Amino acid sequence: MTDFRVPKLNNNDTSYVLVEWLAEDGQEVRDGDPVVLLETSKATEEVEAPADGVLRRLLAEGAECEPGQVIARLLASADEPPAETTGGNPGRNPDGNPGEPQTSTPPGDVSGVIVTAPARELIEAHGIAMERVYALGRKVIRRTDVEELLGEQEPASAVADDAPAADDDAAADDDAQWITLSRAQQRTAEVVERSRREIPAAFTAMNVDVTEVLSLARDLTRRLRTLVGLPEMVVKAAGGLLDRFPMFFAEPGSDMRGPGPRARRAATADVGVTVDVGRGLFIPVVRDAGNRSLAEIAGDLVGFRKTALTGSFRERDLQGGAITLTLHTHDGIVFAVPIVFPGQTCALSLTAPRAEVVQDGPGFAVRKTATVGLAYDHRYINGRDAAEFLGELRTALESPARFLTENG
Figure 1 (cartoon, rainbow, N blue to C red):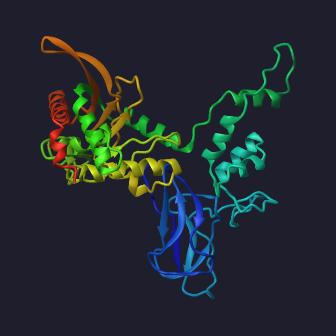
Figure 2: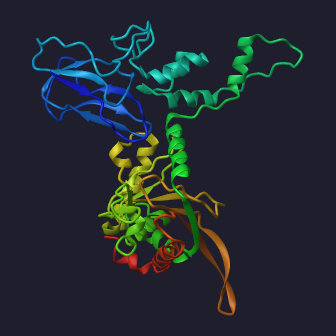
Figure 3: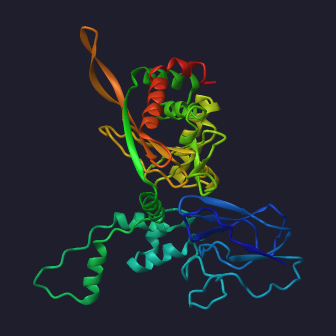
């Protein structure tokens, strides 16, 4: 018999949601078969069987689980009785009895919709009718889905100052004044707090003339039949700087055998790019950006935006970035300071292109400019290095002909 334990999927979450079993209870599975789908704060992940055996599930769909918790057992045969549960609470039934699976749908429900435990708590706390929940038309109802419903509700009616109010009415009115952060936003908050606490960051910004590169991007969009914009160009240009600026892609390490802090070189320029389509902030990673064509990079970013709409990222999509590019491309944004994420030495920011009047010989011309910013860990990178890095990036973007031979 083999315990099926929840693996640690990332460094930010202390619990996950068991969204769906991919194998039936009592089914024979093989080592490496996908068995269960877990949801983290940012992604969903298929977890594979650690060995051959007959699956005995210990936790119901919709329940929360923790890294290391036993959620199933793999028996040598269907006749082998499962041992007592160890290694974590397998869940509770609605009456709170330990050791029994947690139900995933309310009593009387025949819809087949799975309601996760965090979502159920929020539904009960705010008295949301289940008809509204089912009307969402989703197979799995998560906490973020319920938060969307709460956001659509009208604000609570104001109570007259001279009218007495019951304690529960006052509590409900007070609760209506608070905005609950989504699970994903809570994880973002934790990472930002850690960054501010641990990383002594500095910041440098540089204006870049993007008139020609934007024109080229429009031509490439038609030629490659996929969206190519300024973010794709910046990812490609930044990836090409790995060899000249290895520290900007390095991973700060705890190895203190040298005279001071050290950083591990990156083998490839893996660039994380922020994506936010209204369902939370994600930072999927473009792999080996320096050696990939613009068409491939553009395809990656289009795919990331589609995946963000469905919230179906996998943890492997979000891990391993050597440098991050944060996009602030709404009209009117002229300046943005990115967060340096733990495990990286710097982060780039890109603002929306804007029209500027510039001197052109004896006259004037209208050009498109954008601001590229660099926040950096001052323990590893100095201001001079930052200015040189941004200068090389500007040179690449202001000489876009080079992209014509690199778009594949």
